Image (cartoon, rainbow, N blue to C red; front, top):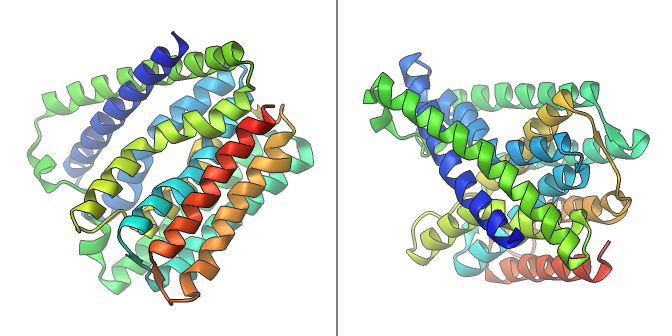
Length: 319
């Protein structure tokens, strides 16, 4: 039954996330916000909503391991699973923004998260606020750079311009559906994960960094695999790194501002977060060696193999 709750929760999170993105974009157009800003802020925040609701629900339910494991595991899955599979199917080109801005910001936030968690074994309001302020600064720099470089077309691919003509009634209905689906989806997923951990005798931390994280990465994985198989533009490296940045800064940042997140399981700090740091750090040498600014099949296979090893060791550790 716990697996059914988890699956139902994931389905609702996907549905709720989609409705929230559509309603948020439509609402943004009504306030005359530019496509560039919508693409970089509104869409990014809305697509992080499922992870935010799961982490917040877990923290409020007294399951901080799920709150932390969800984000750390999702960041690992974004690089090891999603990027690994996509690059294995179809090579990905890397632009200079990767090593000039996106990757440094992801590493900075990842290291900052480790320092914050290890010093007090707690992510509190002040630290959550610091993460959010760092995200706002990053978005400000990103938008300024994009405007100067004239990258309007590449940075706004995710914005559906047909939503400009959406009626107010539709926007309200979409918002209500999205909010309800996200609320119940997050609740059912957390309940299902806790029950499954109890039934299998596995820690909540293991379930969250593997099964829950993979579940919340399924939409991105499916979209990128389909695009790669069709030889279309697959999900970009920038999008995946952006997702990791938002996971740390907005998901954990906002959750910590609402409810402190303690570190209950020492393996989160001694194992999981180092896997996250490792997957993040290895992207830089992979981007330049041996073939510069391209992630091909060989590199994708390495990332995927490392991710499979991570999942195997997580279950073998079983605590």
